[in-house]
Length: 435
Ligand code: XLS
Ligand code: NI
Ligand code: NI
Image (cartoon, rainbow, N blue to C red; front, side, top):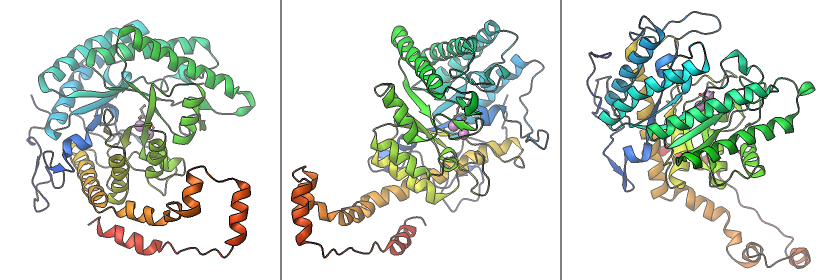
């Protein structure tokens, strides 16, 4: 049985195609800078937005028409696995990501939840073996259930910490079973509502304790995926501890987690933190900690995580440039943490939205590769920092100067000349790469 009977496997047909179920820019086998587009982009589909999101919002009921609803929660969960792999295969996407609660019903007890996870992951494993599709990352949802009202590892209630630890253990067991390449921690409610009753240091110490337990357990079972922390400044917490890339790196360094943890960066979280996406990627790169990305885009007119499918070529170009500079994103990938708009409620919209996102990233990759091949930014920066290539600049960089020697130099060179950045010209030239 098929959930998308009218759609065949989606193929690259080029910009002249008027088939909506075709790639116009994403050509998986096309080689760019020595690697195929498929190898560069490592796309993943997110289980939550694709399979469990219903289109409801704070003001309205669900709108999404989904044909996989069964008569029991477990039947629905099994149907979803079928439909999900059909989507992955039709999109020719090699990876996927999920939270524990996305794939299996929580049931009446933790024990029942774990049993459901075992049953569903058996099914997922079968599908993975049949198709060659791989697990990019999984994670534990430790924010939706009321027990997490005050956080998970940062909760004031030690029983909640223990429950979270059990979920993480199960998540790592599942990661081992499915050969997961990464494991993500997004601290949904790891933050605070009010500082009046919060011991911030104690809560962060506890989060680090859980992370260390995860590393130790991974070692014990002989399965250590790349651990990733996903920063976000707010929502659902008023203030989240993993505010942005720089804050999260300070946490990683403070608690000595550098060898095991990198960052999973999301475009919409970057803008919520008041940064561009490329800023966050650049910060991560400067720490050698760019692990993976959650691809989406926010609405700059709204102050929350709208998780729209990425369609802005400017943003994907600059993001892909950072990824090329990073030497690629593997073992991470480009996970569509994106949901269809409430008004895009048909089943086929799930395919159309991913095609749009994949084409937008393909265009970003092509433009970024051209910028790199032309040394567009390299030349710009080389010229801009040229004063450090010789004379006093070279000596400063070589740590051969001090305050006294530089004072002597400055007294003789106080007629300082700066050069214009011609930034408008630069931006106009950059636009040439986007079309
Ligand atoms: C929510 C986050 C979430 C993580 C995984 O804003 O983006 O979806 O990616 O828990
Ligand atoms: Ni995310
Ligand atoms: Ni998000």
